[in-house]
Length: 477
Ligand code: GLN
Image (tube, rainbow, N blue to C red):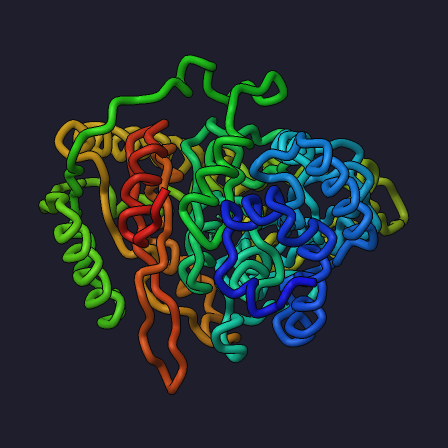
């Protein structure tokens, strides 16, 4: 049997070495995580569902390992955000409108993980259709931060981050449209990677903002994030926005890295403890032999407003498919139009309805040029700023979020919640890869709350994030 305290420091790389050496079986490993979920998830509520065939999956993984056909992911227990499809299983985007819906196919990322023989533990809670930054917008109740149960785990992938942080899974998949992998990773003290736009297929991910969405890993270590990224990334005929095979060729790695800091962007509204921690992180990067310099990104401050025009526009189009006919729940009205109105009015929560209204508004004939068209043009300026900056630096650093985890119910004003995304939305707007690394904690009311360092790189330069991230966290190869 596996001593459960062992899970506290376990990584994918360690577990796969242990499994290959026969130190314990995939069944032992899965059982240890199931035990831990029993112990912790009553309070945390990271999971919407724990699958009933976990041990059977683990048994197949053991058989494969015994045949000598195991890979670094065979038998690894994974949690999956509720907006990523696994064939035959419930998938709901934490929305009532998908009540009873079962996935009819595997997301490409899931298919690739299945080929490695991972063990899917369950599906995790999230903000409804990934709209939010706290997991409070779920139709199935809030998830609590494992470090302080009075606080949110972040969002929208809050269940996935909490599952990894409470040792209720060895790794998780999340999705990131404006920060939903990185911000919960930061609040929960784990690693979260948003890949380059197009590096990972979006096939089988419930669409929120199609020009922004990416699936990515939430893990304990950077090495683990890299293992998962390399497995799920790649060209996919089912997603025409995935990169071509040549784009995945290895790059040259500079001896020391140049890190740019858009200091002008840190002036307002950032928690003092976050700023102090950020300076300490930069010091650490310097101590590792890298250079840190100030850079200008003149339009980065427009990222948040641009995001909150483009994202709702895409949301309003993407969520038109939930009509009560094709998927999930259906409410009958007097006429067919009343069927739609009732299904959508009762099936969607308030934040989703707010964004559909906003999106319909910015796309409407009289306002398209003033809002949507203008936001698209500013998006080009932001992209150009980054392209220019990456001529002079390899990485750009920011805090992941302007605050540590806030209290449940604290940000009831939607605008104050949107401001949480200030440092994460630029990477989505520009399609860049970005990682959140645990960078220490701050003591708030007697609890140590995790903070995160965000590093961004040029498109397809995840290798730079992995290199710097491993050094920052002191991970050997
Ligand atoms: N918090 C952001 C929002 O509410 C990001 C969501 C996401 O990345 N899915 O839109």
